[in-house]
Image (cartoon, rainbow, N blue to C red; front, top):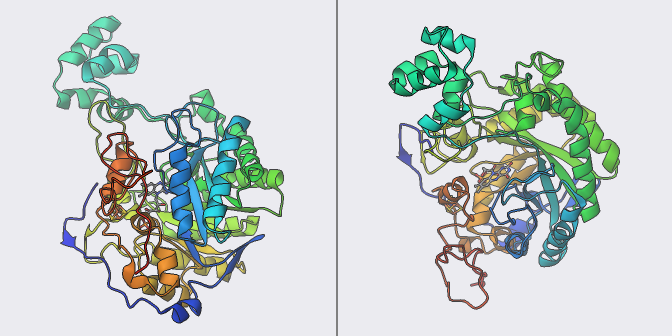
Length: 484
Ligand SMILES: Cc1cc2nc3c(=O)[nH]c(=O)nc-3n(C[C@H](O)[C@H](O)[C@H](O)COP(=O)(O)O)c2cc1C
Ligand code: SF4
């Protein structure tokens, strides 16, 4: 993970935790409507992929335990991890692209409702993503995968040379020379692994995304509704397909790229298709980026217009994240894929404790407040959810009191201590196990390993019935809270 050059080390924020009575009277623990559903409190666990699904995308016992453990803390809402809408293999990531996934997802919903005694609402984040390949070995890429075109021959200065001759010449080049003769895209495919973009309109399956995605999202959302989820969050954030359509870096030549009006066309058409399928009486919103935090990326002024368009279209909530793009991701190791949280934008998405003068806390608040302001000025009351480095009661309460957001997203802090919500609500805030923003969890995510928190994954490992990680070293869920 990238770290700011200032390298200032931050400690968890100290807080004057509220008494039970103060918590009861607080804004954070007051209810809010999200379209047709009501949250009992304005707290929200944003989506977090834990790498616990089966290899073919089904809900496992470990998935149930993961969400069940969060539900024991009784937050206002839990958003289930990014779940794939297509019926294609995608490793141990949850999928919702076919009815065969329904029984597992139904169990997940039941588990959250029962473990929270009905206090927590459960939504699911649904996602589409494009193809990405691992970083290849140099020789293999140049001999097998690279397309030898006339343009390339010209740049190498060997217009009449047979394909194999060109390949051998390229293999013999130093990296610097090779970079100068390959086009930017081929060099990226060699040095980072090939990654599809929404602008690859020469590929049929990319050109036709605007025609196929609305129905894919709509079918997935309809399944989510049938599984009993209280709502659906369309994943329009970070490094994935829908975010790439919204991005100011989207230069598609058709009606879906270029101007903001064009870039909004597919996200709105997906929303409308989903809405038509699930009906008006179902909670439907999206997560998108307040700022992309990459060169040429979308800035707050455009995100304000995007949010107003979504509110106008009828979304029941808008959740805002920041950064998390492939554009500035670090070069992966050989045989590994690029990970969109390794550059500056990744830092802005999941800020760590080694930071700059601003620090890791609430970096997304200002942008969120500006976007919420624009939505309110346009006359819409759509609830706005903020996330990023929020882990004390005062932080949450303050940003609600100052009208900078309507619901407070707490991701890594909820992982560090799933009982945060119950502890704070019942006047036991002093017992919270505070997140230290070390990003150990995010490092596991990057390696596609089961995500845990280093503050608890080695504690009481001999407790009976504890599920352990594949390497048998870490417990998979946080120890049970024993008050006092
Ligand atoms: C392990 C891990 C997995 C994540 N997976 C997702 C995801 O599936 N979808 C998503 O929108 N954000 C994902 N995020 C980002 C979080 O939802 C959240 O925006 C981010 O961690 C910042 O909030 P925090 O400071 O409260 O942790 C993930 C974060 C972590 C740490
Ligand atoms: S590993 Fe635990 S303490 Fe570290 S950032 Fe993740 S949740 Fe927070």
